[in-house]
Image (cartoon, rainbow, N blue to C red; front, top):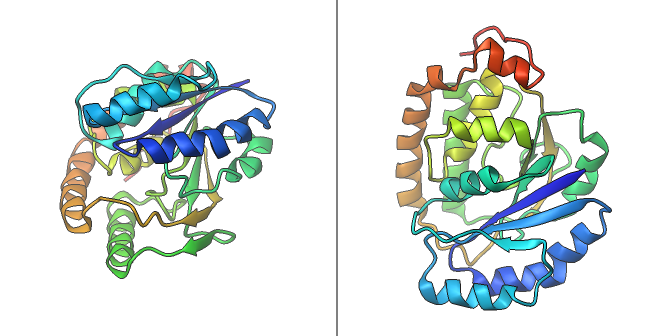
Length: 257
C-alpha cells in the first residue's frame, strides 16, 4: 500500500523545510507504508521557490516538488497534486502542521473500510490546543452554519480542517469535477462525496492555530461565500452516472439535496 502525502505551500518555505526534516519524514518512515510527499508551491515568490528547491536537495527521493505554475489557490494546489498521485490513497495536510500528524494512527486501521477520512476539530475526541482569534472563531461558526443549511452535510461537522484522506481513484474522479480553486474547495469535495454516496469517516484531530497565518478573515470570508454559491449551482455536474459509480465500486444513490 502506498500513500501520497500532499502539502500545498505558499511562501512558508522555512517552516515547511523544518517540519519535513523534524516531523513529517520521520513520522511517515515509521508507518511502515510506502509513501511520496508531493509539494505544490504554486504562486509562491521566486525567492521562496528557489529557497525551497535548494532545501529539498538534501531530502529523501520520496519528497517531490511539483512543476511550478503561477496559479493561486489552495484548492488548485491540492487538485494538481491529486492528479499527479499514483498511490492507493492521497492525504493532504497543511505545511504548518496545525493538525497533529498522529491522527493518521487512528485512520490506519480503517484503511480500506471508507472512501474518505475527514479531519474534524468539532467532534468528540478532538483537541484544540491553541484557539484561533475571536474573529476567526466567529467566521468559522458562521461558515459551519451556512454549510450545514445549504449542503445538508449531516454526517460532517467540520469541512474546513486541513487534513483529509481519500482513496486515490475516488479523489481523481472528484477533482475532475472540481471548479473551486480557493478555500471552499473542501466543501466542494465533501459535497461531491455526499451526493454520490461515498463512505466518509469523520476523525477527531488535535489541532493548533498557526499564529503566522497571513489569510485575511474578511476577504477570505467574502470569497468563500461566493464560492459556496457556485458549488451549489454546479450540483448536477457533481453527480456521477451509473457507469462511473460502478467503476468505483459504488451503487447509484438516491438524489441528495
